[in-house]
Amino acid sequence: MQKVKQSKINILGILKFFGLGIILGLAILYIGLRIGWKGKIFPGVVVGTTVMGGKTTNEAHDSLSNQINITPITLKYNNFEWLVPPELVEYQIEDTIKDAYRFGRQLSIHQFASILEGREDKYLMKVVVNIPELNVWLDGIAQNVEIAPVATTIEVKNKQVKIINGKDGTLLNRDELIGAIEKSAQELTGKPIEITTRTDSNGLGEEALKKLNEVAHQLLGKKLILEIDANKVVLSDEKIISLLNTEPQADKVWNIANIQNYVTSLADTYSRESENAKFEVIDGKVKEFAPGKDGIVVQIAETSTAIADALNKLITTESVEYVAIVLVRTPPTVTTSDVNSLGIEKRIGVGESYYAHSIPGRIHNVGLTASRITGTLVAPGEEFSFDKVLGEISGATGFAPAYVIKNGRTELGDGGGVCQVSTTVFRAAMSAGLPIIERWAHAYRVGYYEQGSEPGIDATVFSPSKDFRFRNDTPGHILVQAINDPKTLHLIIEIYGTDDGRVSEVSKVKVWGSTPPPPDLYQDDPTLLIGKVKQVDWSAWGAKTTFDYKVIRDEETIYEKTFNSTYRPWQNVYLRGIKIN
Image 1 (spheres, rainbow, N blue to C red):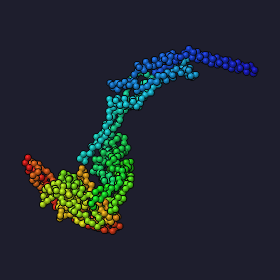
Image 2: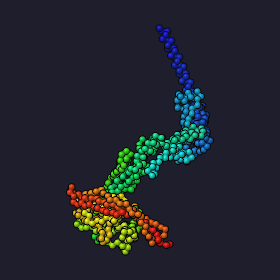
Image 3: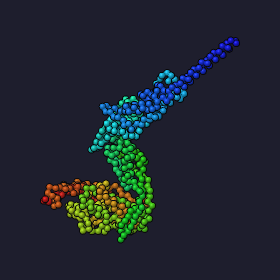
Image 4: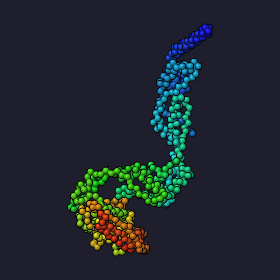
């Protein structure tokens, strides 16, 4: 038993002796290496492709600088080749050499074993790539490599839908390419980098094209009407269809970005800051008037969502959808009632009409008449007489010759276009719920008064036999304001006053007894050259019309009237030139 124990002690002692010897030997070897390679990089160290072992830091610096100079970074694509500008890559030579020199000097068993075994230890060159400037430089490369994608488009012509499928594009793999440039700089191989590209898909598959075509056809003939206060914006089927989503792999029917862009354009048009009221009366007529206006901010996100919801309904059911533009309002600090003592508080009525295809003289007369009507004050209990307010109609008072119906024929006469304004005042007075004392219909249906309106809602004037009159039976004064836009040929008459709770109702117009127009009529015109023919009137069917006008306050009818009109048929009228040049 004693002998076994003694044997174990001898073996442990021998092991300890040899272990200490190995450690001592390695330590001596390490110290020898440190002394023998003082100031030099240990063997086996390689930076990129440059051997660093045995070199001083200065020698290593020179070697790396030389390697950088002879290994530029190049890009290749087909038969093209580009050299990456040196200033886009910063080589950190000093920091790289410091790391290489530390190899083997950090008491790392792994590094020490690597030296003893004679293995190579590769280091990457430390670099900093100027990414923003490199992207700018790559933009120039892209012009020679990339092919822009073509988006799918939809056209609507003559109620026919035409879909032009998009085409895929070719784009640089920028992230991959920048990574390859950085790697090439680190490894200093000088091997050209092959540019890779990716496909930007824009074409639609057969199933997607079929579905898009079906939806587009379901929208033909449909309209979307956007309402913002008294304004209406009508989107035709062509505009609606242009909002469909044509992007590949799209999971939504509508392109929300396009809808939001459209609403943003509406916001640019209709958003405004609040405006304080202005009011000035001179010689019994308002010379300066601006009602207080709320500030308006169109809410783009909410409005876009409402439009998308309405568009979805148009696909399957409705033919016309209405959307109220979502607004945030800011009231003015000074209102209309603050700046006058006449009881003019707010707009109580509005009428509008259009006069497209009017000749210059008629356009002038509409504007002149509107300017003389605007600012008119009507006291409580008083009547408004169109003829009295307008005054004499002649060339001497500024009216231009324009075509009028006189003695059964179309001819030039002063004041053509005046009835555009009297008709619009008639509509405004009914909107305000005012009693109509005198109104005359035209002899035949005039196209100007049916632009955006039913037939039969017109009012002709011809002094002194025909006038248009209404009475102010409200508690306060009434102010008549005209807004005329000769560019869009749009006239608005606004009536401001006291809101006493009345509500007006105008029934739908009934039309019957239609008779066809007579043959075309040609009339000689000495102001046109021989051979010239100019159309000045358009044919209209004769008809009888009627509609009811009712005013209600507190559930009681305070005024009602039925307006009957008889229009005789009218032919196309052409002026035929007889003037000799």
